[in-house]
Length: 349
Ligand code: NAD
Ligand code: TDX
Image (cartoon, rainbow, N blue to C red):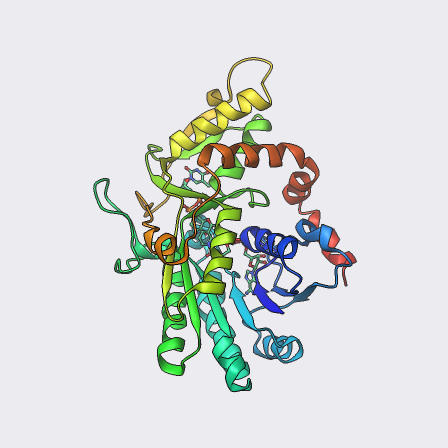
């Protein structure tokens, strides 16, 4: 049994579904179901005894201690977080609470549980912390990409809170010997992505005939990775990563935001043509995000060299799959837009 936190969110739900397609080993999925947690995404697992859902906050120590004692996982994979940079600018408190205090509370509970294991189980145990490239700050156009030894320089309340959690995870290894692994990944995209983030927001606004709001000059650069490639990287690090190490995960796919939006418009023009004109006509430039990091880029050579992981998707194939997924799931989109997916949650208890 493995324990996943945040398994009802974007990356966590993709991870849970991919894992259960490939493994018999079960998952206990601990999620608070914030606005970003959507159990309807995991509907296909209804009645599957390998998936146990626990509605709990990682900051609730007694609840987490109970889950650990009852299910005795061999590993904890920590996805749960407040994840949206814009929200962290308007309301940083929840980010400190979940990402810093919540991760600390989880680590304490895991440390207590880990100490109850026998020597072999303690050695085999893993705590895998899922983090972001944003902890490294912003790059200039000619800087080399972030490596595992790049100094931390977080710029938003989100990235600062993730940096805090990374440091706590590191400290629990150095101080207490907890067998931890950390991954720092670039921007993900793919199915189940909440439509507050660039790619799903642009797809859904485009087909709704709304404007496509590009921040600033649209030249900020992100490094994009298809979500199932990130999930594969996490499985690889879990099974073969060296304890105490961090691994950067990225797709070698840097692109300016405006170019991403153009690609999406062009795909939609082909896959769901408008009666007249192009989706590009809906692009509008809006006020920039405060403190907007200019460029992220990941040097993924360590995980490639040491663990043999490589992304399977190119941006072209991954983006096409993503657009197709949103076109094929209008009910999911409607439920997310109206908040109706919460009704599904109520039927679960
Ligand atoms: P998300 O916002 O889509 O999902 C977060 C999930 O965590 C939700 O299901 C939510 O209900 C749950 N959650 C939030 N607070 C909780 C709490 N206190 N207790 C229990 N559950 C809680 O996020 P995501 O995009 O899937 O990101 C998952 C992880 O990956 C995060 O740690 C994020 O920092 C990291 N990450 C994300 C990206 C990306 O591009 N999305 C890239 C690199 C790293
Ligand atoms: O409407 C928009 N217009 C726009 O120009 C939105 C929502 C975003 N943007 C820009 C801001 C960023 O430069 O697009 C880029 C991507 O924005 P987001 O999708 O909000 O992602 P980002 O801020 O880069 O952070 C994401 O990647 C790293 C995730 O949300 C984080 O959780 C992850 O750690």
